[in-house]
Image 1 (cartoon, each protein chain N blue to C red):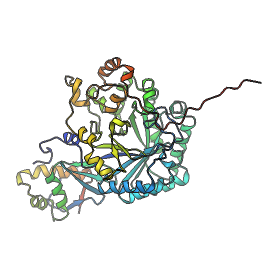
Image 2 (image 1 turned 90 degrees about the vertical axis):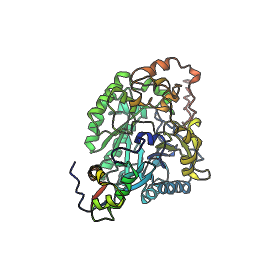
Image 3 (image 1 turned 180 degrees about the horizontal axis):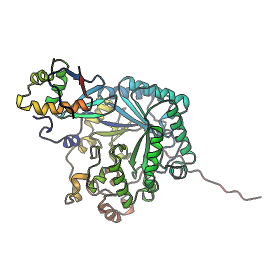
Length: 89
Length: 378
C-alpha cells in the first residue's frame, strides 16, 4: 500500500456512489464493479468532507477525528486510494 | 472510533441484521425459457400470464434506483425472450442500476452483441454446465452448448470485453474446472462457478448431480488456487475445510440478498422459491421497498439465529451452518448441518429424513412432459 499523502487534496471518485447504512456506508465503484465498506459513520463523514477541504488532514479535523487517530484514518484512506474509492483532487 | 475496527458490532453481524437495501438482488424477469435444464432453480419453461407488465417493471427499477441498489442480477427463465428486455435494461442503467444478466445465449446474435457492447454498467453471464457439448447438453438440453458458444463468439467479436461464463458445479463437471478456465481465458472472459442447489427442478436431480465429498474438496482446493474465480459467495459451506473463501461467507437471505420473481413475488433468496420464504409482492402497497424493510419474514430472518445442532461443531464460525435453501429442500432442519457439510454431518442427518418430510417443489412453470405415443406398425 502506498503511504497516504494527507497534505494534499483528495475527493470521492466520481465513478463511486455511497449508500448510507447503519454501520457506515457501502461504496460502489461503477467502473470496476467493486464494493467497499466504510465501516464507521466518522469514516463516511471524512470521505465526504475530502472534496470540500484543501487537504485530507483538514477534512479529518473538520469531522472531529482526534490527532491520536490520524494515523489509523490515514491508513484507512490509503486503502480507499488502492480500491479507487477516492482519488487525488 | 478507529476506522479499522468496526463499531461495537462486527460487519458480518451488521449484515445478519439486514441492510437498508439489498447488496445483491436477483430479478427473474420471466418463467419462459427455450431450455428445460434438469437443475433449473425456478422450474422455468412456460411464461406465467401474471408476469409483471413493462410499466410495473419500470416502477420496480425506479424503486431500486431510489434505494440505491447498485446493480441487479437479471435472470429467468431466459430473460432475453421478453420483448421489452432491452427497454428494461436501458431504463435500469440510465438510473444507475447496473445490470448483470444471465442467459443461455439463444438471443445473443451479432446485432444484440454489438448493442450490449455499447451499453455501460452491463455485465453478461452465459451459462454452460459442461466444458464440452456432451457433458453440458446432458443437463441443459441438446444443442445448448453450441448455442452458448455462438453467443460467446458474438460477444467477443463485438468487443464486449470480459463477459462472464457461469457454471453450476455437478458431479460430472468438477473434473472440467481447468477446461472451463481455458474456455474463459480463450475469450478473455471471467469464470464464475456456483453451487448446485436442490431447488426447483434441482430437487429431482440433486441426489444424482451434486458433487461427491471428494469433489467438494477438489472444488475448495481449486478455488484456493484460483482466487480470481467468481463464486457469488456460493461455496461458503466449504470454508469449514479451514481457510475462508473470498466473500462475505454468510447466508444473506432476506438480510443482504433477495429475489423478485416474474410475477412480482419477493423471496428471501434465489434458491427458495417456496411459499414459506415468500416475503410479499411488489404489486402490494408500498412496493418492493416496503417488502424489503417491513415484511414479517425478512424481519424474522434478521433476528439472531441459533446454531442448533451445529453449536458444538468447531467449524460453525466458518460455515455458519451452510445454505438455508439446501437444508430446506432436502428436509433438514434449518438450525442443523448443511446436506453437504464437509464433516459429513449432513449426510448422516439426511439418512434420517423420511420422504414425507421433504417439502414439495410445485410443478412450477415446467412444460408438460411430452407423451410419446407409439404407433403400431400397420
